[in-house]
Length: 597
Image 1 (cartoon, rainbow, N blue to C red):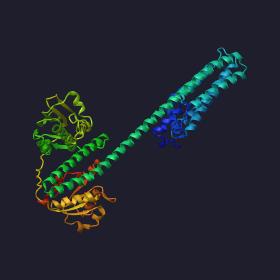
Image 2 (cartoon, rainbow, N blue to C red):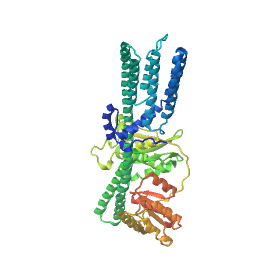
Image 3 (cartoon, rainbow, N blue to C red):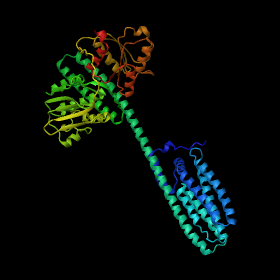
Image 4 (cartoon, rainbow, N blue to C red):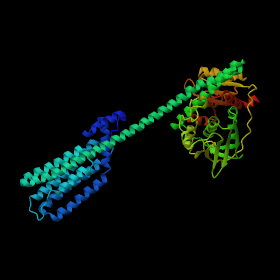
């Protein structure tokens, strides 16, 4: 079996392919691309095998009968064996040539061309033989038209092969006319008609291969463009993963150090400065999260994780997290939701969607009251965020979903964000495939709504509120490779009353043994650590070796879905950097709840 030459992957380069366009007129690409095209043309030729086979055999058998029926015995006793011999050659050629991937392409073309020439030469010989005998109906050269027509249009040979072979057949026939003594006038007439027909066939063969080469080149350009797009998408994915991890790390440390300073500094002016610094840090975190979210959504890095969600308590907690922001602006937020309403959705993505709607109403609408309203219909719950603000015109209702668009922030003050909130909402709606819309008129407020599939309501355990004033108790094993983050985490955890032992890599933790880890109440680890072992692999290894089976959490800047899935399967809590200190304290307190109590 012969391997079909594959197209050189280096040729899947758009500039190199575009440079091949000037070669189209010569019907010749560069060597690496020409090899691929010859294989492509061979497969095209093999795709015609049934029409070629049926027409070849049909015409051969038809002329067998014509020879036997209308030619005298002294002629058909020669023509029929001759046709039989050529028929055998044609059958062998059809079998040999039409095996893509099993026969060398140049050899296939040569074999098909040989069969074409033999058929043409055979027809020419029979015509000339009939010319030497007095027949009731004179035999003309019309049969050659059929042969030349097949070679030009039907066989699918390369233009050079079909053109040269057609002119060679014509030359053999005219030479035969001269040898049998045909009058010069008849030879000239035959030359005129057959030459014109062969010339037209040559032009058609050239044009056919030209178009075929052009189509093939366009296919390769499309493939090269697709590969380039895939490479760019992979590059964006790598960039986003790197940016997400590397930028979140210092922001995480900044938040922890600011929190520690706020608890240490007592002088009023310094506390105001720290407060502004904390606000700037939180604003920077929100901007970074928005930019990374819109980028991750645009390259398809986000996959929904669907589950049943009780709406009432979930929305109440979400609204509670925005109470302070609403109070600063003098806005009242209220909730109308059936107590046993539930949806089937991705809670994280739906929270981002509804939170962005609420943030837009608080920051941009100029409202005094904002209402979150839930109504249930057939198989769907409609979640609405209603405000009594300045409203939107029909044109503005489309513009607000464009990236970096803020209608009432001409100075681009950062306190009002960067204009990505509603754009992220639109991306999330497309990802989740949720019907959504906005209803508004100028001066009459606005209603942003989304329809979410209904789910199954289930009772939830009571949540113990976090007490930030009381100290925490317990021993924490901290594994963090970044020195600044490790110092920030260690300082803050100790300030909360915890005993902390920190390490930079997994190997040093594994070297502690059972006795060294004994008494640990909580293991906090980054995911990306120095050395070959990740934080998740460290936790799994400690469990498998029986060294630690207590509470664990990954504090990481890696937001990939693969890590989230792996952590869920390993029953490990994931806390994403940068995390606000208050949220980190609540998470640590929840993991240490048996010890703290």
